[in-house]
Image (cartoon, rainbow over all chains, first blue to last red; front, side):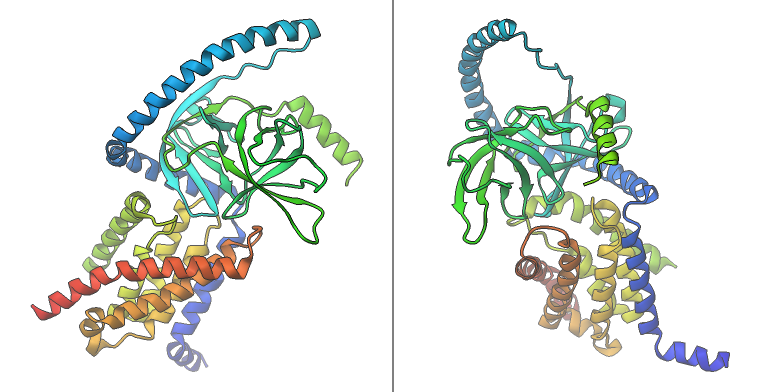
Length: 279
Length: 161
């Protein structure tokens, strides 16, 4: 009996092995959210991060001249903008004081360098050389001078993995700055879009898109990008609104992690309401 | 034993090149898959069983370095190793590795590998599934095929020497 089984196994060993490995792979696929799997990934990502940190000088030197030109130009533009902003700040301060509005919460910024860019078109992510030791936690927003970059999804002692806007798993509550129209920001694999914008709402090409105050992850008012295209879709109640992100992800090298986490009181209250009145 | 150790070192070197240096030569976000070329090479040199095991282990390493779907590269590379194993011929190993046949085998295995990979990878996203799978698979396969010409020429020169 066993001899016959053994002969059978020998005759079909390739198929037996293929079936075994396929089943094993599928089991691993089903374990994706287990903390052990996340732990393995964090260790591997950290290892890779250290390695990439060592060789990252190569593209930095190549792009140094271009980067210098961009920085010089940006410096002039920012100097001009800063003087205008100083005026606006004073005016804003006076008006807020009059209205008795709360001042916006001040956030701490943790500066980080990008050591890995994982660009796979759909689920793009970055690894930063800052981690828990620097005060970085999961769900913290990541920005640069141009605007919103993404959100921290995993963090180790000295490294953090960031899901950028151009990731199919990334969602953020956003609004049109001019008309205050709200929508959901999402990456469909090729374009960054603002979803759930009814056809009747006022959205135009060139409108600035910012984070909305409805988001529990991102502070309100962070620049996301400009509306680059607005199309009416036949047979749909919604417009197709395409956004050109403010951040140039190809050139991105340094970012800031904002020490902003959702207000626990607000989150708790929302959770309680959801428990009492399930949707 | 020495052979396996050598293979492990080569895989490690390829993994570093793939994850650290390859992103600098990406075209439109698409990268060639050096580890898949290695799996096909193993299949032609050692046969189906070794290629499947190599594919699974190499895929697992790649999965550990990705941020999504652990086990996906292991699955697709196991299947690629199985398919490539059909072209194993002990007496014609050098001949296959040093000729256009190697490119065709890499191309075919890469296409199937990428289709399996993207079919699962794209689940849950808003993109038109079939069109995107075809588009991404074709682009990655073409780039991997072009890069696989480098080892092919190396094997051809070695065979002539």
